[in-house]
Image (cartoon, rainbow, N blue to C red; front, side, top):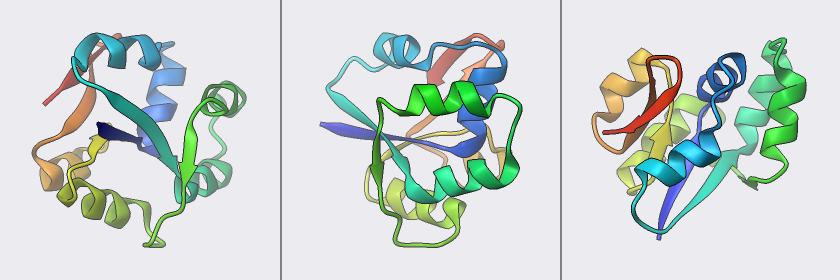
Length: 114
């Protein structure tokens, strides 16, 4: 079973463009998976306070929260990626560092697994 970790900017982007990432992840992942979120991502959302924060909070209620070993979200996502986790992100710098096992948004409405 694969684990998909949702990054802060991915959540903000999906909420902003009303992308149902649960349905889209089902569509692109033809294997068993679990969706999780880092506790540091939740703290980052609280700090950034996007206007979509209310919607994001409603969506992530259904997602298991895991404790990060690193205090910086991107550092933790890179570490988890090396362990085989799939990272859902819209952060271009992070995508360059991850290379494989990335879920991104395409055309402001679809998800793509690389």
